[in-house]
Image (cartoon, rainbow, N blue to C red; front, side, top):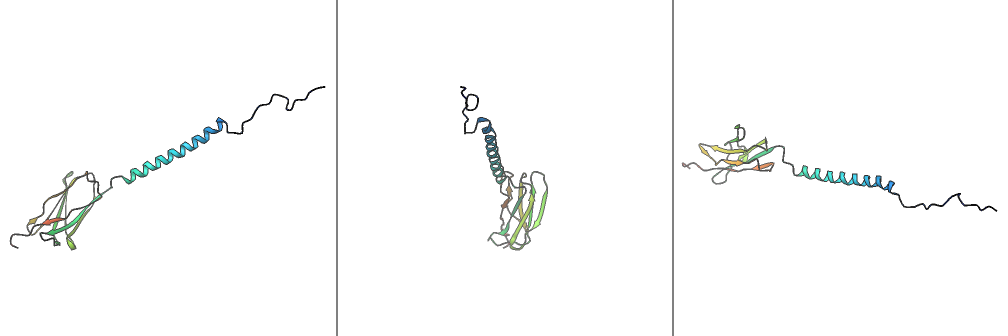
Amino acid sequence: MKRKSGNGGPRTLRSTALDSDSLIPAFRTKAAVICCGIALFFTVTAIAKKKPLTKTIQGEVLDGENNPIVGASVELTDVTTGKTLGIYSEVGGRYHFTDLKPSDDYQVRAAYKGQQSDVRRVSSLDEEGVRVLNLTIPPSASQ
């Protein structure tokens, strides 16, 4: 009498757990997702801390008693290039210079009826996109 073996050969145990060949692609996928998340985090952080593309210098021209002066001449000098811009103060003594290069240094001064304010400076190291400088012109000696 012949004995029959169940499957014709030695039995091998099959693991129901994932073998190492199927773990590698899953690990790579998770690693890629984590790397993309980290890169996105650093990109957003860098954008948030990025220097502004332009700089604005604005403020008010005031007399010695903090009253606004309308029509005062305000002069902005780009110290880096030597270029000078001039405007007049508007209602409320307000003035503003926009679209300035953040990498340049500037000086601002106001004048009215022969009197001048002190020269104020804005450095390229100043990372503010909008810098407010109020300029005071002392009253003339005849007042």
